[in-house]
Length: 127
Image (tube, rainbow, N blue to C red; front, top):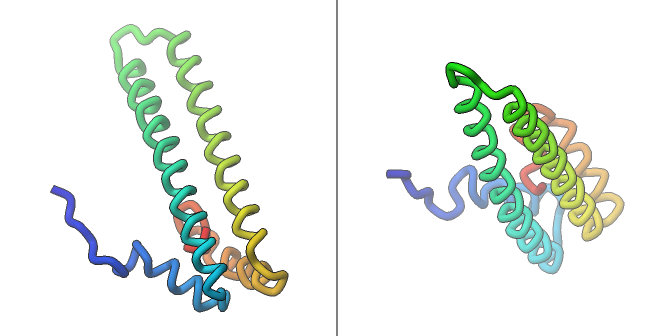
């Protein structure tokens, strides 16, 4: 059974609060960011579930005694399109986040991202 994290534990709202403090977001911006994060998370989760299914199908087909190369080709192409869609969703989210930030906050956000380039899907927990 998956262990539930406590609200505010590292990995849940910790990054959002740290982002809010570092960027000095006002209440309105914090509210907008929370909505953006929620929507983005839901969209990305659905896309990742589909990607996981496609990868599972690709593995299954690849491990068959006589794999069908056409099926592998089609699955590979679908996986590529799914990765492209994930990239578009991420870009759209970053654009939406940037639209609610002031120019100085956007600069600070860029510094946050660049300071943690190898952290999961993005450098800043705000995104």
